[in-house]
Image 1 (cartoon, rainbow, N blue to C red):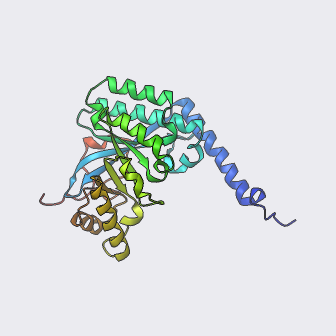
Image 2: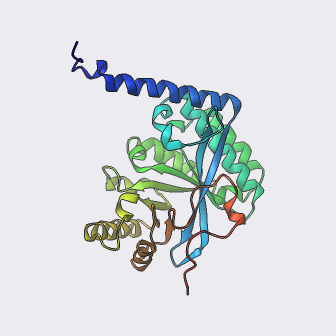
Image 3: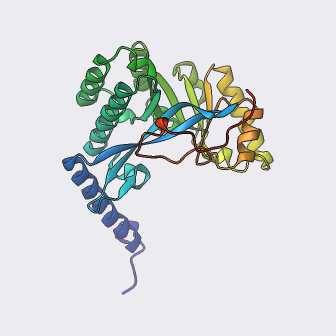
Length: 274
């Protein structure tokens, strides 16, 4: 019998559904066992690549064999579910604990706008901030551009409330989606992280050069600190530094690590001067 052309009955959709079931069960098991941790990646100063401005804490889970599974393997499956809220709660708990343990650390963590107003998330934040009055000013919450602009009013109110506590906000993956610049007047992001797609081969890709310079100009107009994501080659780093990018993130300077990289030298080049 030939396969049905109906997407809901296709072999591909069946395989995707089966994969999602497996992923969901893996995450549920990790949550039950609290096999959840952060992997830390440095964001370095563009003019001094040997110095980290802050670190990003990226959520990870352990599967049944003990392998560390990155968020990109499961986040789409759970993002709209209760498991997504639980992951956000654990991320903020782990992030705040790291900040409490290291008084000089600045750290960003990712959050879905779906977790705004979640009582457990709010409680985790409140408890974490009680430990040390400097934690709030050293915490950065990252929200992706696509999710922030889906519910701008809710995000704006939440950001205002958190910024009053001293917490900063980063707009993640800037330029990757359908950017609605009109919302920038209402969403006061402190940092903008420009998407990897604009960084790749920017030293030779003239299209990316034009787009990157436009995004940097927009960020500067709205008084936002700039980070270029996905930097993998020294030539990319040099070009980005020259056009005025504030900070760089990517494998050139360090892969995400579940150890504490702020206790070790940055893995990238040490730039001279500046």
